[in-house]
Image 1 (cartoon, rainbow, N blue to C red):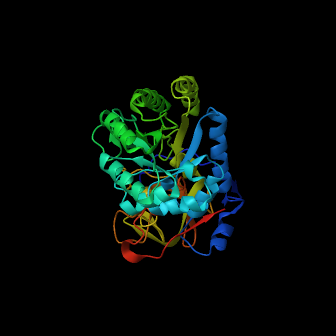
Image 2: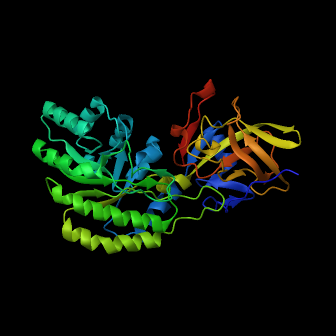
Image 3: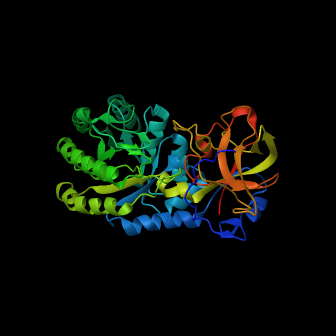
Length: 411
């Protein structure tokens, strides 16, 4: 008997009509015909709108929302998000171009990431966006480039805090890190910003990502605000921007539960008066990526073959890790776990079976779902991977084995 992996909770964000998934107000089969090819990613505008609206209802009105473009830099997605959020955060010159094309006020765009090259920094200075400084060397480069342009660069200090976001998928702070300036080194950097007379904006503190524990995020926010208030004593000008990062996670795997926003919102409400008292000009910003777009996207691949090997059934699709590295388990997972998957055009089906869904690549790593209970499927059926709106196509090795490109649509 073939073992089956633990099942996920139901993916209820997309409706099912006549046993077919609906995306963007239409059956998946119709959407696939409209796209004209498989595989493809589809992102649902309605779900993007609903996620931002949920946060607006839950969080204090004074907290601003910024979209971290790296989560999904598809231009149409970024354009849509720009109309919903208060700012955009980029991590490359390419992302800066996409963000600038949205018409977002440059003062509401920030640029983070270690190893920014001089041409990228020069473009950011010319665009008038805020550069999150990651090192003393980067500060000196920014000051020199600003002099060459006869402009005062807008800068904030990205701080590597002396703590981490506990239970996070990726730890971005605490200990030695390539990201940001160590908290204990920040006072000297702040004094140097004053000497160079740059346009100081404030702080960017980011401790971790993909966290489903509200208590861990609350603790990280407590320590973030405490650190920001301490560092403000050495700031060359009043703090006008306090980006406290994000870290809000979404459920991917069996046993995951959605993040409870209520304790996080209550804690922010408790902190805001104190922040206002000590940093009266500061805008408090939550920078979110995955949480805003991750659940609004699906990846769709078509079954091209069905085979049985030593008693186990494999569904072979025309898509795989070259399009969706994360779903294959090769993007940060230590032990491979399945993303939620269905046969999109027969969600429940009249027959069920335990199968493994694989891609077309010549590697045993090319697995989309391992030993899962699905409706019985054959050639031409559509495999859907949920939770695919963030870190999908652009986080994948698309040139690997030179297979055809994948397309993306917003519906």
